[in-house]
Amino acid sequence: MFWSPQPNAMTGIPRKPGAINGGFYQSNDDPLSQCPSVVIAVDDIKAAMKKVEEAGGKVLEGQVPGKPDEIPGVGLYASFIDTEGIRVRMLEPLPMQSESDD
Image 1: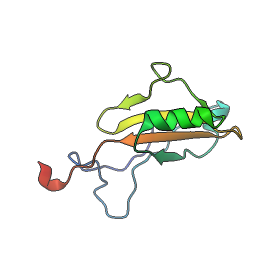
Image 2: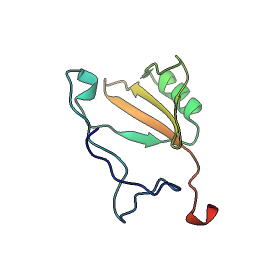
Image 3: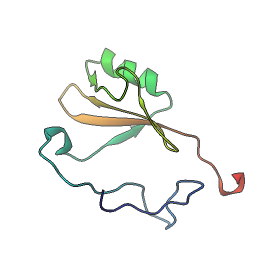
Image 4: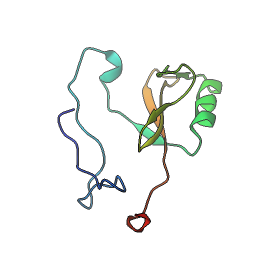
């Protein structure tokens, strides 16, 4: 990654109003990395993974096959290929902390 906003260490929210979390990465020849990264927030990632499979999509394997990956301080993450061959990501975010939760 060669750029990323600097979030508040406690909340994870970008310090500059109007900014979004994200970053830019070096491109490579992997066809799955040749498109924008769309991430959908879900309330229950395991249920969402099941729905993807039931609808004909394919959940991609993470660190432990069949289970979402944990991103420390962020939440649970999984990627899938939809029925049209497009890679999409989903995230079950951790609950937001307010600045007063210190």
